[in-house]
Amino acid sequence: MFRLLILVALAGAGLLALPAFAAVVTTFSLDTNDPSNDDTFSGPVFTSTLELGQPYLITISGTWSYWGAAGWGTWTGTNASDVCAGQAEELPQILSPGVTNGPVGMDPEYAFAWINGTGTLCPGGSPIGSPPLHLASLQISLDGGSTWQHLEPIDKAYNPEHSYQYLVVGLGSPAAIGMRLLDFPTSDNYGVFTATVEATDAGAFAVGNGKIVDVSGNEAYLRLVNNNRRGPSRGLLKYEDETGMKIRADSFTAVLVLKSTNTAYLTGNAFVNNEPGHSFLLIVQDNGNPGAGNDTFRLDVDGVTIANGTLTSGNFQIRGR
Ligand SMILES: [Ca+2]
Ligand SMILES: [Ca+2]
Image 1 (tube, rainbow, N blue to C red):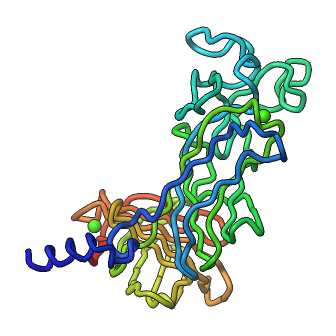
Image 2: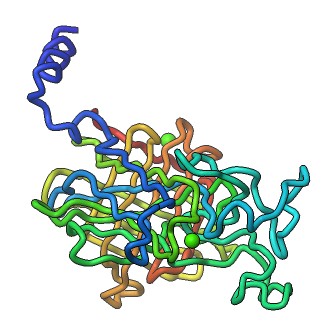
Image 3: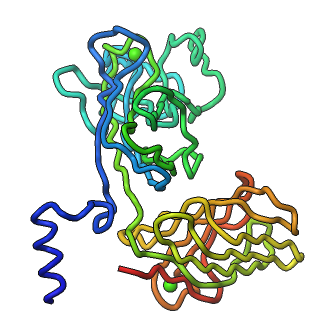
């Protein structure tokens, strides 16, 4: 109790760095409606500087429309009357203030519905392909707007909840993180994106081992030792499947541990069957004890998911304060 009181007192005095005791570093939002039409982007908006070399998880959510509300026709109760492909939603998750909002067919990564007469998507009223269609309209800057890129989400698949997560590593002062949306004109859009930026909980780390059935149906075993501290991330990853395929890493380039979701994200370079230079992403979630039937992990190597599921034996733990 005494220690807790000291922490509360220090926090009240503003003496504690926020990332050490709260995973959420900052939240910010982008209104896709930009009335000025002065360039080919909605925004940009900027928020805090990300610390050099520190990993962050960015979650971006929301729905929006390329077109003015009238373009969707009237809402029939199940869909908008002028939709030629997909299933629109009646209103954005977050309305743009001060303008007329209507049906939406886009989120941060995908177009999931589009309207008649929209040239490239519905020429002559016939859709090209079927929704959802991946977009690359949302751009992120990690260096205060000097450079912009469309980031690959951790889960690339369309999410009907319209929320996507991205792992980034900070570039340090004075660069701030920013967000903008490629479109023109921007004055007919509506819908707001929200972005939440989370940093690792200082002192938290992931450890454990367990078996899983991989995406090919083979049994595989993972052992993870992580002792994440500021600076280079020490630890060990060993993975072996029943065919004898071995993956090993002796360190991590980025480790992000969130106590709020009991999830650890680890990236680095691994040896695959003793061959170096393979990038990996490991996501471990500690859902309690025992690990079997509860804990999960996902392992991507060179951008391909090779295992993703729930432990059949073993246990992973997210530890630390
Ligand atoms: Ca537009
Ligand atoms: Ca566990």
